Image (cartoon, rainbow, N blue to C red; front, top):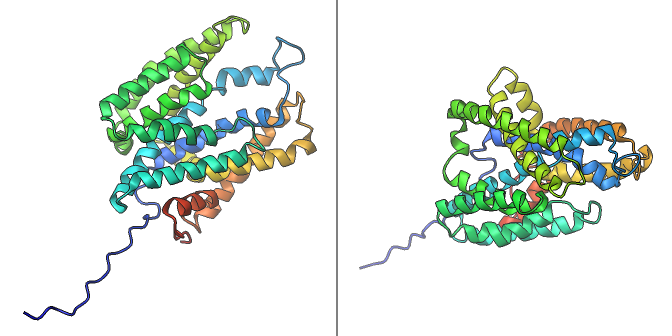
Length: 338
């Protein structure tokens, strides 16, 4: 029998589909978390003084401790776990080696974080990359119930046995991974009633925890753990409250500001550091008590970033840093211009 000489057409390249199936509420929530993180990062980057004398906090610093500190970082960490799961699912549909793509992505993020450390000691990208490789990647082989129980256990331990901060990352990563596997993020639009029920419980509990934090002497041996627990509970209340606000008449206005910030979170996180480092000498922030000036700077940076992100995303699919990370992840030039 004569063999056919017709050539088999090559299989289409399995490259990432730009911006496919984005969950807009998560973008807005990520942008919201980015706003709070900047309020915390400016004093860290500029090494501002806590108060006029030991044991006495500046009023703005005291306010931030009760409303911002350790409230937004947990949201961002939880979302990282969700994004990790969503990326793995998408990569598995387009590649035979999805975990290799994740390793490449996390290594690139770690190298970027190492460079970022030079300007912002204590930044988040490096620990995110490390915990991603050591905790999230191995967890992809575990059943969802095990991941969920591990996430709950590690998160609780991080605020009861430790004092929050970076040690909350592994548990929140696993919680995000488990929640994404259970399909919760894609069902958010149909869970208004459940979100309202969660807020009805979380808000008063968080308020009581914040009052406990306020009433506790900072010199108390348990003060940092109480603050970490209050921060985690407040983070839940903040996140759920925003998700519900997005369903109200205020939703479109909030989304217009927060979604672009969230879609370009990596770019905005890095450029905020550059802007703070550049502005600090001009504004005299370093080793100062100019907390009002620092908050005004945060507002100015977020305003510029919200406008710039909206302008950029009208022309490109990804922010500059996000695009570079995708190119390294897929090891090819990913289309970006709309």
